[in-house]
Length: 574
Image 1: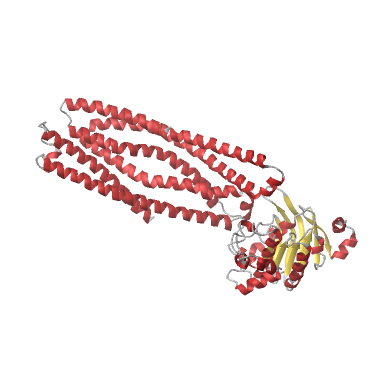
Image 2: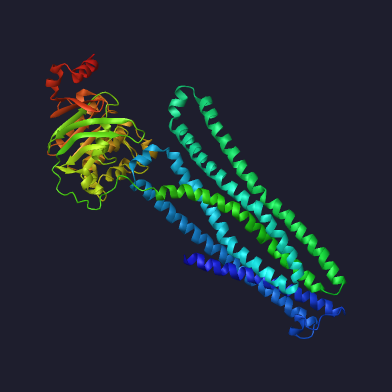
């Protein structure tokens, strides 16, 4: 706030210095008129400075120079202070927006295209910055300059001033209407930028498939249509904004023509002076650009307002899944897990779980198997409390997950998913995310348990190798082993493996499974896997189909029962 206050004061000084310059120009004109022998009103303000003469012109011109220097310095300060204030405010908004997204509902993140969120951070905040800078730099300076100029004009010649006061307000009706139109279209344009960003991101990440299937032309046409739509929306906004200046230009031309004609008549009648005329034109020249800037400012502010609407949609969206006011801490977790008649539907209305029930005892390894779409991954989402169940209860150590603090709940869990999410950092840093502040020795021990030591040692920079965006510098199997090492380093009492070894070859999988078998001792482990070879040694196998548990038991027991599990086993063996 201090930056804007200082910038506003500098804007006031800038405006008043400009008005002072034009008033001094008026006095120079009056002095010149007196020097050439023309008569002046004895009550003219010029006589307050003494008898008109060359020395008075020197003093007045020196005053104009001083006012110019003051105006230049305050203009620099205004720009610097306001730019700093706007930029700092935008950083705060971006931080708040990112915090709102990352700490808010997972459903919100998973339901929208990433490009839309990226657009809100970049394009929308840029539009807010441009509007904020224009408002901060032009509004106060423009308003004070226009007021100061019109007050000075009234003192010089109130009749001439009336012409200006009649002409310009007429123009602001269509200017305001155009600004409202800009806001609506700008919001559409900014939304479409998010769609184009998603198309670009999707195209770059799917480059292998595009090449393999010869989809270059298809992708180019698809993205090209997005560019064309973006250009069409941009031009619509531009047409509205471009109409503002011509309206004000015509208005200004009419006003100046009226002033010139009326001034010439009044000077010929002896009711006005050369100084009045020069000063009046100077004040018009000072005020006209500010009036024009204020006119275009409405359109810019509306465009920034449309961007702000999209940004504050994120900030104002309250999380549905959040800690209850009386949420308790979760300490010394033993690892008992219970799903009691749980139902759940995703935001799109698709019913994923339809009364699912099972238990996992502390230290037990429970495998969850079933056909695709049966609801297996939803079990993990509810256990992590990324979503809340529609009905039934999910419990940890007989405590509902909705009754404990979410941070405590997730601190006692480790997750390894099929899409091993790595960050654009070093291998060591990615493993260390399992437990921030872990020692190098602990990081390397976790890597060894995940059977990752050999391939890390073979890399030129070892643990300091940059993995690239989403781990693109590593193979799928290498990424999964890094993710496994991260989960092992977390050393949580509950371990969740969602197709954690699906990208490994048979030899690596056997080694990792042996390491996990040792690591899983004394901790509760939930395993989701399509390859039944990875779950046959589980203490308990839960078979899920159509959102319900249809079978449970050991591997041999389920194979001999001839049910869903036996059918899956037969298909894989065949």
